[in-house]
Length: 332
Ligand SMILES: [Zn+2]
Image (tube, rainbow, N blue to C red; front, top):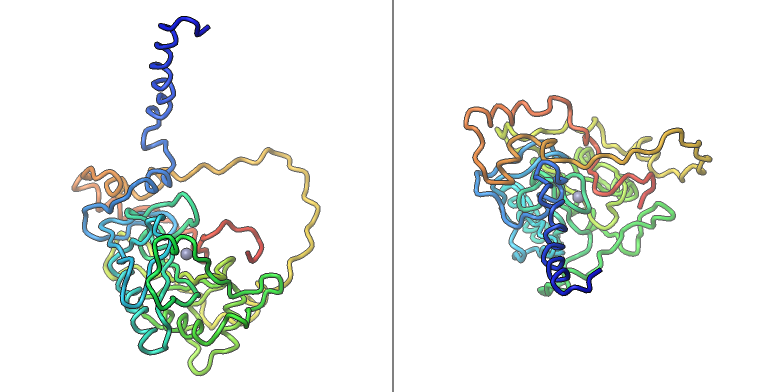
């Protein structure tokens, strides 16, 4: 069939064009939002603004956490997720500074914050979308500057014996306790997510005022890092807040329920319908202002603020869920 050199030549020119056709048909309205936002490498040149809710939104005018600071180092630089609101950058730098000066913590290893324009990410999280979430490693910062390569490869230390669902006392210390407590005491913080075994250790060890434990919430995973979520900055109407955590220190039966051994699996019932794969989140699912954040195209001046403020009257679905990992029903 390809014996004729002319036909072969024609096909060699045409095939790449044909292969590109489906991609051309994919408008930004059909491409999953995590691809669109994951591909952008720079922030939008707009005033800083968290838009939408923690697991369904985007970030205008993001600021980068410098990858090296006096008291911190950003990790996994290839992910380009050291972006946030100015409030998140200021919080992280202050925590690093205060923890070192006042608690003797050697410095923060900072994991994921947000993407340059926020939004959903290709991997790792459902939240971290509006520049108000940061993952902070529970591993101490080494007393030297890590190379770029080391920041990709250095393994974090798990603080939890996951089989026994208890804290691993060979690595957990007062240092991690003080660091989480210091973060929780910052009035800008809305919630901190940790593994239930870590919450249990904090509950058992806390002395004096226990009010800060209210913000520390148990969730799957979070054995290597804790996840800090800031409140919406004051007056930022485009940012959709969460409800405050329920009152109390959260050290009672709810926490114990997390730490129960898993029930033996039931025989799954025969599926009656084929499982439908959930549709990926699209740009149209995000607040309308996120289109401008992504594309830079100016939004209609009279429509944009109203759209941003009236977005999604329903309460945000991630009230408790940091959605760092898919829910598996286990404490991985
Ligand atoms: Zn996180």
